[in-house]
Amino acid sequence: MDLIYAEATPSGRGGVSVVRISGEGAKSVAERMAGPLPKARHAYLREILDGDDLLDRALVMWFEAGRSFTGEEVVEIHLHGAPVIVRRLGQVLRAQGLRMAEAGEFTRRAFLHGKMDLSEVEGLGDLLAAETESQRLAALRMSHGELARKADGWRSLLIRASALVESSVDFADEDVPEKVPDEVFGLLDEFKAELDFQIGGYAAAERVRNGFEVAIIGPPNAGKSSLINRIARREVALVSDIAGTTRDIIELRLDLRGLAVTLLDTAGLRDARDELESRGIDRARHRAEAADLRLHLSPHGKADSSLWQDGDLVVASKADLHPHVDGLSVSSVTGTGLDQVLDGIFDILSQKAAGAALISRERQLNALLAARAVIEDVHGLEAELLAEAIRQAAASLDHLLGRIGAEDYLEVIFTSFCIGK
Ligand SMILES: Nc1nc2c(ncn2[C@@H]2O[C@H](COP(=O)(O)OP(=O)(O)OP(=O)(O)O)[C@@H](O)[C@H]2O)c(=O)[nH]1
Ligand SMILES: [K+]
Ligand SMILES: [Mg+2]
Image (cartoon, rainbow, N blue to C red):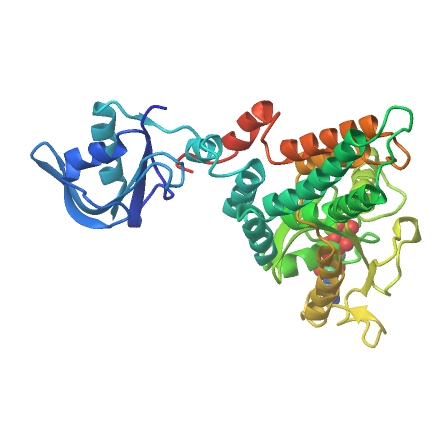
């Protein structure tokens, strides 16, 4: 593959800008600018020259093919963090026939050279996009190959089962149909249980990755927009004493004690006075029903029974006007009760997050559902059919790790990376 380069650090001013080069001959490209680099994985402080021109003083290091991020020969040049230097180096590299990397191309090469499987690529994408502690931890596990290791464990269950099935066929004699050993079904039940845990915990893991949705609902003038503004510490929503102020859904992304949360302000629930308000209330109902949690806000702490779901929170608003309401109460004017409300939301969501599996992407879920489906009712299957079912389940695990059938998905995943990654 041809020689590519790109800035690996975010472009702009900073202490250091790292430019990465990957491909056969990367080391000699660097040596033409920085002089001999005898040792791999060794940082050399060098003058970077373009002919007689001094470009910068930088750290230069290189990694041998096979022992680098992409699997190819890689050079990293740690320049001073000035865009003009990075630009100039780009000109020099292009003049030597290198081209700028496409989005995600370094990671794509790592995948193609077998340095990463597809789940690790997805984990790396999640890690680079992580905004909260829970997202960082989940992405780190995925990018460090935890799903790949689990899948290899599941695969060994299938291999052991398959070997037992094959041997039962080999030793069967013509007129007595082979007896599949019970141990095979034990192995397949263990395989199913492993997948069921992942499939069952997918929804929570997807929420940890994309953010839990919490809808603030209640009658007009309950104080919903005032509450979201208080939590946001800025005016994200219009507030007024006119009932029916909020029409559109207003979304606020929060890092709530390490959990990604999208808080939704919604239109006040009542019989609408006009067509526009009615559309706003429909949106409110729709998003509230789909949310992970509903916070029912009203002056006297009453829930909206038409939208009530188990585990919902009921909060009395305007606590500065109506003190001594039992249960949760909050004042968006004084801030009293706000921490308790946030604690209440966090407690409920962290319980949901606790059930999160490793898989958090629909592609991963579909691969496991496919593997699960072929092993669904294998009890009593005769050996040949059983062997085929096991083969198909193993093929689905290959899909999970991108060992087969990943071509069409590669475009999607790598273009979601930025240039230089
Ligand atoms: N005293 C007091 N007034 C509040 C409090 N929260 C809201 N208000 C007032 O109540 C009125 C309605 O507040 P909003 O935040 O617009 O209420 P809302 O639920 O978003 O109303 P709609 O968007 O019309 O459904 C405004 O005049 C607010 O200033 C509070 O905690 N204490
Ligand atoms: K209002
Ligand atoms: Mg409002």
